[in-house]
Length: 150
Image (cartoon, rainbow, N blue to C red; front, side):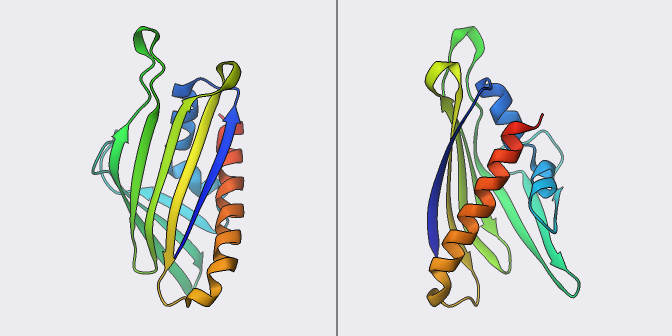
């Protein structure tokens, strides 16, 4: 099991950063060899389930996730309350959780904090350092891409 945290700032409103980071099918556009499908009807809320299918046949696996916390940022009436989304990973191979927090940053920018605990079933803890570096790099690039493109 590994845990990591990423922080980014973007010249976006809280609402726009939130929208970009929680548009689940877009994650499949930036994670190699992955397609994301939302299983439950929209809009996203607590209980929404989506599946990230990754790999190349015959080595394909599904990473099933459920939204367990859904608190979009509060920007109405001049508020700037942070948003928080927590996902529980419940796949056969990938387990753990992820949190995406969007809050006010310096100079009116959005500050994003992405926290994750990741377990890969059948992968010995000997590989945790490699998994941590790989996951941090992959999810860091994904966050950068999602925040840069509308």
